[in-house]
Length: 382
Length: 249
Image (cartoon, rainbow over all chains, first blue to last red; front, side, top):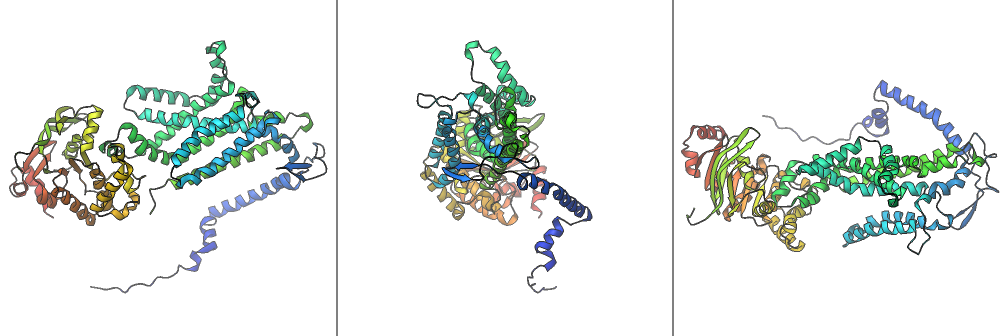
């Protein structure tokens, strides 16, 4: 028989911690990894300096005098023209001049405050919702926001009702339109998608068949086709008096399209829920509706968050397709304004700008998804 | 068992198939109020299937089951009524991982039995106290050990004050040192006069609390006896073989 002394605890050897270790394990762990690291560094070396030259060092920032929140900020004596912006650098004054078109499309200049309030409300929403998290009546607050926010936004942007000047949907455009299409598309399609996913799992054969057919039909057709159908084919079937708005038709098409994708994403989540959860919910006497709302969906949706957001990001990018049915979203506005004879040859600036704006919005969305995942994670809280 | 007590469960001529596989063959079983029945047998013998038929988690093709005089049929209302009287404890606990322990317990009382949140919560905490884990009430299931989770599951099934408790191998997924904490709770329950059907291989438990032990093999009830005779005077060879296999260690 042997008895062993207790061992003392030591720090790890110095070569196994800190920056040296990080470099060694992540960048130079093998000769092939080292080669890739060096190749990447070289690629960055040949790409970054010219990009910076174009965007910043050789670019023109002669905006003239800019009025920002009531303060006049003087960048230069006069705003640069296409001629005195050099060809070797970006001409940012061009973006500044077209910024209104990029943001609001053909929205009347006198009414800009209305979309601005909606932008402000949207930002406020993201501040308020986390704040009321611990408030007693948070469900009531959230519910009223869900009902009020779209209503108020619609009244503000569309006008009418005898109070505000009506602005028809042909005049909506730019980032405003992009955001409207994307958010309405996502918000309307989500509940439909959840119902379709449940329908596809249903024991009721008719519902199951209908859901499956709908999902498979929509998923087998490109979004462009659906937009065309909604925009040009659908009116052929309607009596001439029943004309309804082009934007509305596009929104319905997009919502149905996205619903099919959400349905498949949610179905993936539903299938990941162990059978025991269904059985336990049944065994304690919950109804079908209670079982899904209280037990199954919270877990299934939580698992699906990354895919739901991924699918939403795809939709956001797909909104640029509305150009083909004559709606002018942000990208379409960039295309349109690049035909301005006074600013010929400046479309690059426009596309770079759209890229940056799109990236900022979508990257924020994907970060937000990560945050949601962490917040709802109760599985590994040890 | 005193003879004047009524049958709370009456199973007659029960037959069930999974596809072509004949899983339960002509099962007849009556359980009296307050009776403790232990069901054992080799795996695949149909014991879990049998008790899962009692709360209609499994559908059966022939025969009938009466629970407190109500016959089990496809009628959703009836099934919900029966499920509110028959509670089940699962092998893998099946707690709801997205809810805290106390929310797991209050779910059925609030949504099925229309109790107020406060009533349900008070009762839940009392039950947690009874199974010895009141201090874990605000944690999530995955923060608890297996034994603790199973005790929560038992408390959850008690929350609706059921008349009948079904246990489907409640200790088979547990580490050995956690089995006794769950069995202790079950023994306490047995003493309180609730009707229990337990599928288990814990023969010590069976000997201690069971009124009757049922041995199943190949989808049928092979032998049924009181614990004393069950362990000491097995009549069929199959039971003797089974007992030899599980009692040698």
